[in-house]
Length: 184
Image (cartoon, rainbow, N blue to C red; front, side, top):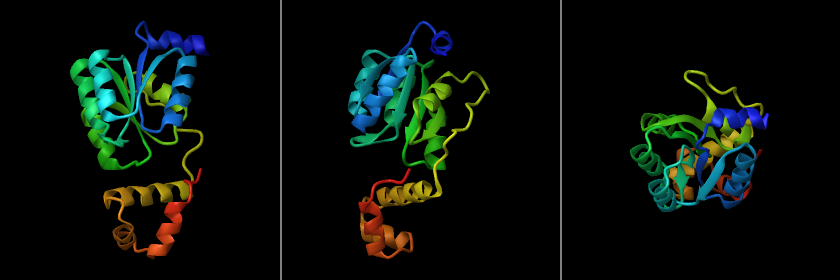
């Protein structure tokens, strides 16, 4: 299977992974390397843009929410420096508006976290109108709820009281949810 994927990748196997979740980006880099890519990682908008300017890759996977800004800035830089770069947006805060914005500026696909290396590879190598198969392990209802709460929490600049008001939820209940790890 790896030989089949290597043939699809082409001669330029460079891949830029931009995500501020260090353990995740390291695991993804190892998995993508096993699939034939030559990954380079960045953990911020500034680092991602610098690497995109220095050595524009053939492929990129960019997280939208980074500590120092929005991953859309990295996508714009990639599009300017290498218009044929195949970009997949990966984010834990899925929303239709950000998906539309990412695709408008040049992303070929948009995957919610947690996405595995197979999902990412399929999205990067999808040809023409062919769309990758839906994930075999879609998010659970608990995970979707948690993602929505996290998105609203971020929109409210991490203000618990405002988030609770917008979600029509008791503040203490929201605090308990925010203190827990994300469900699978």
